Image (tube, rainbow over all chains, first blue to last red; front, side, top):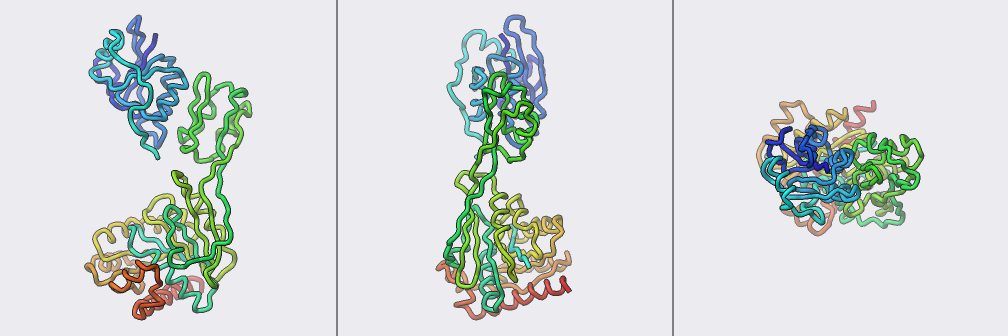
Length: 120
Length: 285
């Protein structure tokens, strides 16, 4: 399966970015082959509003089945749930650490957003 | 003439100046329409006690996706500059609170799968307080789209001698909406560092909008001369101000008009109104 991990840089050694919508990079990892592809999220970082919404669309468009990140707000969570993507919050360490924790079954999927929205 | 009372900083006395000038102008026999454009926190009614007899709802269209017709091409989400639509492989999700009603999504949809629903932003209420015509806007609680409600307030007055708009504080979209289309802007400030700081921001804004303006100092004598110095250095016209007065604070706290109960302040407001009207006459002649 493919999973998406938010990161401050484009590599497997990059730290996990605690922000989702305004995270620096999205690293797509194939859990079987460990192939990975990083895309910049400059568009989300510069968004006036709705950064989480557009980020969630990117995750869905990449056909990821899970998202590993720091925190996820209500609108992003709504879009991810609608797309059937599982969200794992409070993930830390490097992208590789996150991948290992996920594969070892040490992460628990969130039932809802873990932070308030930035909008009203 | 459309006169807009603005400030930058909140609490400088915009509403105090606006309601008293409006009533004074009425007493001079002018036909005046007061517009409370501070739709997030309208308060001029507390001083003018209008009988509000008309009420209309302000609504904007928003997209409603027909999920059966939609083939999830994502054209609507691509064109949306506000990230108000999320196009997913099997679902299209709309976030009404982020929508600016630009129409892009339903115009671009190749399958005409987007209908227009309506979103209520607030109400506009009108009436009279003796001979003074009065309109105010009231934003829906939790709503963030302010300018359309202000625009609805602005389009209410008919032909009168003087429209007085009480603008919201700040220098953001609601203030711009209140200012645009004005014939003259009166910036109310106070002789404090905060008053001066926000006055500079407000002056930048009205200059950008190309509007004629002048400054009046409220609670004059309570602070220092920095506002006066700044206006002189920047060649900004300073009109008569209102002296600092404990009586004024007490009257305002009781919802009373200064012109009815404080002769010295009435005199100052009379001079201010003369100056504002003279300014307009100079401009139109």
